[in-house]
Amino acid sequence: MARNRPRTAAPSQEVALIGRLTQQRAIVLEALMAVEGFVGAQALHNRLTGDGTPVGLTTVYRTLTAFAEAGRADVVRESNGERLFRYRPGPDHRHYLICTGCGLSLPVDSEPVETWAEKIARTSGFANVRHTVELAGLCPDCNQRARGR
Amino acid sequence: MARNRPRTAAPSQEVALIGRLTQQRAIVLEALMAVEGFVGAQALHNRLTGDGTPVGLTTVYRTLTAFAEAGRADVVRESNGERLFRYRPGPDHRHYLICTGCGLSLPVDSEPVETWAEKIARTSGFANVRHTVELAGLCPDCNQRARGR
DNA sequence: ATTGATATGAAAATCATTCCCATCTAGCTT
DNA sequence: AAGCTAGATGGGAATGATTTTCATATCAAT
Ligand SMILES: [Zn+2]
Ligand SMILES: [Zn+2]
Ligand SMILES: [Zn+2]
Ligand SMILES: [Zn+2]
Image 1 (tube, rainbow over the protein chains, first blue to last red):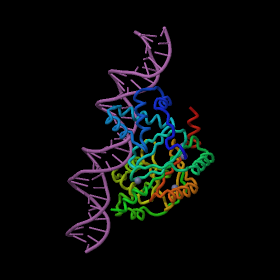
Image 2: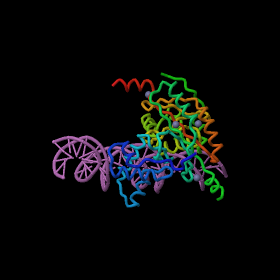
Image 3: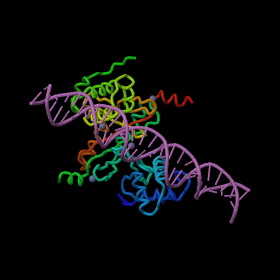
Image 4: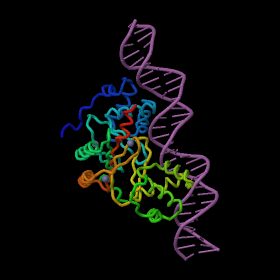
């Protein structure tokens, strides 16, 4: 339980993880951290330009990608192929149950999957095995709304 | 290097699942069924045109998509966003360990994940929960080759 | 054979993402 | 503090998979 708002590092600290500290990276990360759920690079870019904090779209892409590779953001794929990013305060690895209606994302206990994936990786002979696990459905609210019409 | 592959239904039978029976659909499905692992729509299209069985790329896309939606093909996403399709003989649901080097795909025992996913779906309150589970790594051969340089 | 709903496919359109490259700048070094 | 340079930026062009358009062809029922 707990801290409803786990102490998050300052953008400037986080930036250090992916290279040189620049204004733009701080801006992008601050924006990413301010978002509740998953966001697309373009949506984040729009938000920034709208806020009068223009940052190049290319830079947004680069920063988010680097951040994700550094393990500080979760990435999922929309059905249309778009990549959505979500800030991850800690270094922990999680999976989410995402509502296809409103984007609400709930972290789920994925321990069973992790051990399963590890076992597969170990016994398969494959190297550098990674896994993608996504759960998607309609949250109660959206489901209600869907039935309403 | 003939390999025994469980050949099940005829293309013409399968086509019925997605609408009207046409020559092109039969061609696309036959090609899909002839492939061992996962294939992209474009790769399949190339193979067909190379075989002197030209079918429109659009039709290949439409057929594969429809077939996947009918639950007769598995779909995974490459890192570049490309969708890869794989024929699924039965209505059974499986997951694969895919080699990012050569495309080799091994079905894995996913029973633990299935029960896990079911439990999440049941306890979450979400409706119509679906899951995506992908394992990817380097197969022994590709790994060897990678170290070779 | 007639006919109307469907399917096809070449070309154009979409659209997220990446590449190019001239121009900055953070973070040293002197 | 001024200079230096590898690393960073960003506007625009390029990429590349997938989709849309729409005129034409084809299935399958009558
Ligand atoms: Zn919802
Ligand atoms: Zn995991
Ligand atoms: Zn391989
Ligand atoms: Zn499954």
